[in-house]
Amino acid sequence: MNNGDILMGVNLSKKYSNLEVVKDVSLNVKEGEFVSLVGKSGCGKTTLLSLLSGLEKPTKGQVTLNSKDITGATEEELALFRREYVGFIFQSFNLIPTLSAWENVALPLFPIKMSNDQRRKRAIELLEQMEMGPRIEHLPAALSGGEKQRVAIARALANHPKIVFADEPTGNLDSATGDAIMAILSELHKKQGMTMLMVTHEPELAKTADRVIRMQDGEVMK
Amino acid sequence: MNYIYIWKEIRHHRHRTLVNVLGIAVGIALFVSINAVSDAYQKAISLPFKNIGADIVVQRAEKRSLDAAQAPASMRGIRLPFSNQILSSQDMEKLKTISGIDAMATSLLLWEFEKGGFKTIMGVDLTAPSLGPIKVKDWLAQGRFPAKTGEAVLEKHFAKFHKVKLKDTIMIGGHSFNVVGLLEIKEGSQVASANIYLPLADAQSLLAGTTGNINTVYLHMKNPAQIDEIKRQISKTLSGITVTSSDSFLELMGGMSQISSQFSLVVSLVALAGAFFLIIKTMIGNLVERSREIGILKAVGWTNSDVQKQLMGETFLQSVMGGVAGIAAGYLISYLLGYLSIPVSTPWELNLTPAFAKDAATAVKTIRLPVSFSAGLMAAALVLSLFAGGLASYFMGRRMSKMKPVDILRRL
Ligand SMILES: Nc1ncnc2c1ncn2[C@@H]1O[C@H](COP(=O)(O)OP(=O)(O)OP(=O)(O)O)[C@@H](O)[C@H]1O
Ligand SMILES: [Mg+2]
Image (cartoon, helix red, strand yellow):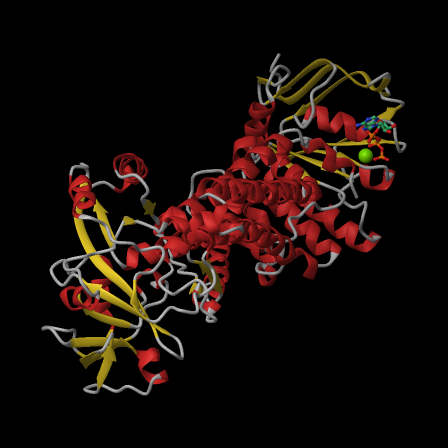
């Protein structure tokens, strides 16, 4: 069963009341692989990502992440699981407006037993990696879109995740800034061997990935 | 728990914090001031008796006296007040048989009618210095208290009105007395407020043809809780007697004073519950506004109990601030109300001046509300504000646990 696959989704379905948004999807991601998921708006990409990342439970099917079957996990178990293995990057950044850049990066570390100095050290290290060193004390409102997304990427990495899920990470950015963010993600994959599953609807961006998976009407195209 | 985040949330959402803190503060301030003022009323009413150290006063009123509200034109010289007829030695013997009485003092109250008006004369028992009208001894403004026969102390305002000074002599019932002292009656002491104070024996000798008479008895109880029981016993043992206590003032007063302390506690708790209800509603409203934030926390791996701790930290801080502000405001309100004077009407039997006297104001004395700051009330208020915080976190926690992290994925 374990042939280098870090993420396995088997016969996944998701229904919202009567509407089946994800239909019997099976999908594997290998460790160190960069996979992109493309498809028209509304075809179920975000829903599939939420099932695979343990944000939401499938109506049917099974998810195994890092050799752990998370299908039957409770909400609290899923939270702990995400804390340990998963990083998220969102289209709309989702930073906490009251917290500074470094505190946002340290957010996943707050519930973990460690000193504030350690949290701060880890956050600053990541922000410097994102070339955000001079902005560690800034609030999100004082940052540009591209800078916000850099903070969000740093946050996704704070807990040393096994896999990073990104849902249209450049969707809210102009093309130049988007390209810069894509370059960061691509480098993360190439240099650090980060496993990534990225949702996008831009075929150009999808090409950066090792493998492109296409979705249509809730199904994965062969 | 993360103090940085708690503090930043509190500080950053100043409006939100202010509304919550103010809400708790208003509730707590109401609670504190209602209870403090109600306590003060109870205290104000007990003041007249407390000031003379007595629990019960015993008198014998003239039977037909209740309708004698006009001055008989023929009245001249020394006479007994209608409400204070002589208590016989048999009366005194019977009183002594009643158990539960700790101390007993007597006095003789006299009126002297002259052409232009009247004087009230109190003969005080110098042998019981902590009970009855002898307590006025503590309020000397000038001079000293009578030590031997032929000496008198005058109430300051009376002395001034009649232009009598220290060391002057004054005629009472045809006898001359040396003025050895002037005193000022303490607020709320109308039960002891006469114009002239004499040693008991001197007062007794003013009543022509009799000796050793007294017409008022002051009792101090071993156990104040027994007052009602002993009052009942006295009325049963001695017929035709008037027995009064602090309650007699209470019965005369309306408004706040009739509200028992239990009732005001209930009222203040209801006010508090109303304020808390609104605050909890607002806090839950705030939480719903923050559902995206909660979703982010959960997405990055915060469990429900991690989020709950954060919310509890925030509400705890706000309820402490609200509690402290509320206690301060409550005491400020009570303190300001302490400048108000409340009218305390004196029961007829205890009013030392003739009921027909023009000087009607003497029957209704005002007392400044004796507001005090009790540690118990303060502690209760603080506990209640923390309880509000706990209640709010409980309901917020229930609401928060229903918020799904996945919802943030579809928000822009
Ligand atoms: N909570 C929900 N209740 C009902 N329907 C939902 C819910 N969430 C998503 N849907 C529906 O599921 C379908 C797929 O949504 P999803 O967000 O996965 O699409 P997507 O491929 O990510 O689209 P986009 O590219 O626009 O982000 C849509 O038709 C959407 O309306
Ligand atoms: Mg989507």
